Amino acid sequence: MSASFSIDPSLDGGRLAPVFGRYGRLHLPQFLAPPGAETLSAALRDAGGWTVSTIGRGSTVDIPVDAFAAADEPARNALLAAAHNEARSGFHYMFESLRISDIVDSGDGDSLPGPLRDLYAWLNGEAFLSFARALSGHDDLAYVDAQATRYRAGHYLNEHDDEKAGAGRRLAYVLNLTPEWRPSWGGLLAFLDHDGHVAEAYTPAFNALNLFRTPQPHMVSQVSAFAAAPRLSITGWIRTGR
Image 1 (cartoon, rainbow, N blue to C red):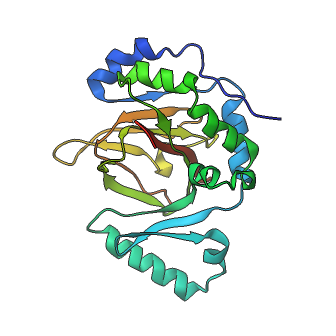
Image 2: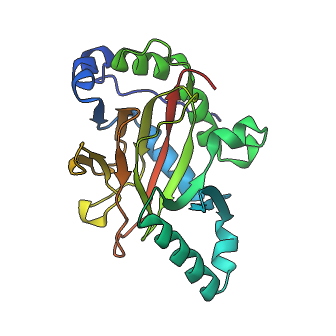
Image 3: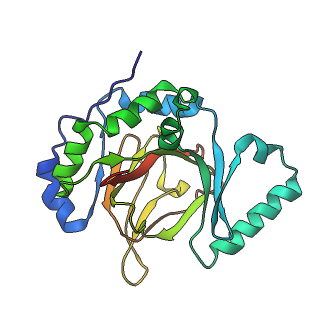
């Protein structure tokens, strides 16, 4: 049976447009009507195929989580030391990912829990795209990619602005799917002003959609060692085309 999703009827993209136009970002609590977020959160907990995603010498590196766990401690420590060395002075990240749109588009969608496939289809349907167009004022939004992310203790995403020439990225989004989260656990989506200060930060509240204009400097703060759960989300870009 397919999962169905809908936007909470209290959220109107047109009415939210002036606020988004002024600030270029919004935190929208209780975004999905029940039981959408609960269904997705359970699907992420059950999903296999996760990879540890990071950067090595400027290139993306994906390591299956089972392979990373099976490596001996010196090998894992060497990888972490190299990652942290690169992270000190440039763009870097380390978290676990499940590249939903890549998997579905490659024809391997059956390997994913059904609700994740269904969400990807819904994000590319008229209900979500028309909401995003009305809120942002971008009438040319035509495609939404998606990946699930799982930030465990020590994971992070350094400051960057999402700009990529020719990719058609207009907006970025993060749908937060961890049932409980405290700000002291880290994992905050933080927006940076022109002098490097944090202008605003969003706690990954359950079923909240964070939507923001790109390019825009932002980061995800490192998840603390005492966080009681992984930070789960589905994230990606809303674009003019594939």
